[in-house]
Length: 274
Ligand code: KIV
Image (cartoon, protein in one colour):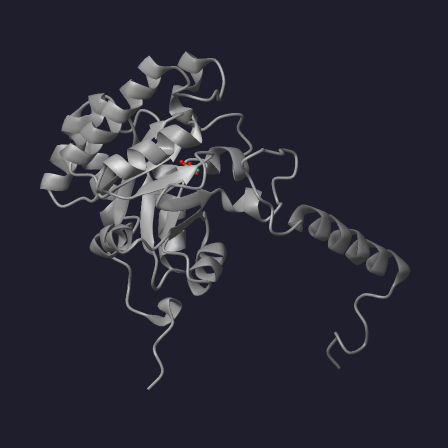
């Protein structure tokens, strides 16, 4: 009997993600916000689907992720859960849904699993979130950490700048990685840090690192699906590789649809009922 491809195999668990690092297998992660994209990405063999708070920008048209609410994330996670059969589905905890207290984090993350159908949650935070992560894991909620450039800190940074440039800042980020691992996270997003620092962290910790704008040496990579597909074409980021130019294709298709209506070519007799 032929070996099953990974896209046909059983649902991905957090233990599978940890084992992938031990085997040196790269982890494929991508965001999704609705059932259709989640289904297509799942069918294409993505290992981790993240319902990112980036939905604030690509779905809601906000300038940052800060306005996103827990209800928004739960709504989109629930939609994605209907499209996912195999991938590990991770809900991103939005700004001020977990920072106020450990109790707030427990209640919010619990809702992501119970109401959203998520298998795990992600939260931004350095060593200062370690206790929160520990409590979430203790009650049965797997956590993905997120360090380096943390978009929810945009008002402190004053922009989305590269983090970990100087030795002291790099050391701080290494300590953050160790603290998040020690607290029990099963994986760690490294965002917008120099590639040498990402390599150093990846070699140092046992849990998988998932990079975005962090170079090729992380254990896995993640992108915002709208960037990868060329849907958010108002932005062009150095770290994004566009595999499609969907924005252009959509504009062209919709223009053609409009021309067909205006000229009377749509609908045809075949597209109508007798
Ligand atoms: O919100 C998001 O989409 C993210 C990923 C890009 C890591 O946090």
